Length: 201
Image 1 (cartoon, one colour):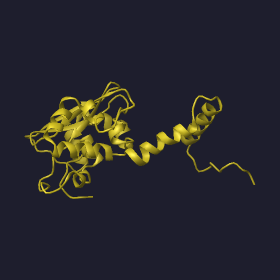
Image 2 (cartoon, helix red, strand yellow):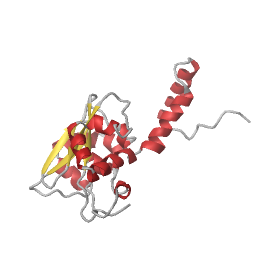
Image 3 (cartoon, one colour):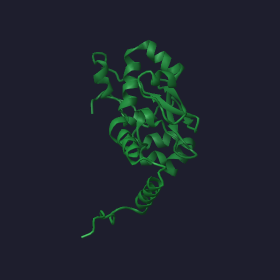
Image 4 (spheres, helix red, strand yellow):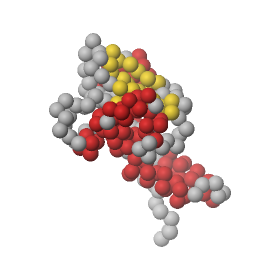
């Protein structure tokens, strides 16, 4: 029996990634433990929870909210969620009059430090193309019927600037503390494809 694990179930992309990782490790260019730590951080620790904590803090702390809207990068860094991507994060506030939607039309630039790994649909060409041309149609496909009197703004991320949507605080949540509010915030609400209804998921 071979000592090598069976990789026959892996896709061509997975096999190429493993081969590249192996080559870089053999040449001493990559520390496999460091790679494992990075993957673990984004898969199990970061996720959208960091962004949810940022949003919940803004909902309960007006001074922090103003700082967040004025200088998103610094305000987010103050909570310990430092971006390793070298990009500024601009925070966009959803209101009763304005709904913000973020996209990256050229690739899939995304604020990993606060949202974790991007969903597959965010990286797909149809979403990237249609979000700019038909944002209301895209939002409708996510179950969000935006009233005609609400302005929809689409923000295109770049290598230098990433965006985070600050969703409206759901009605009926005045009695919830910050920790409980974190549980209301979804990844999609911070991208702008969802609005929050106040139900804890």
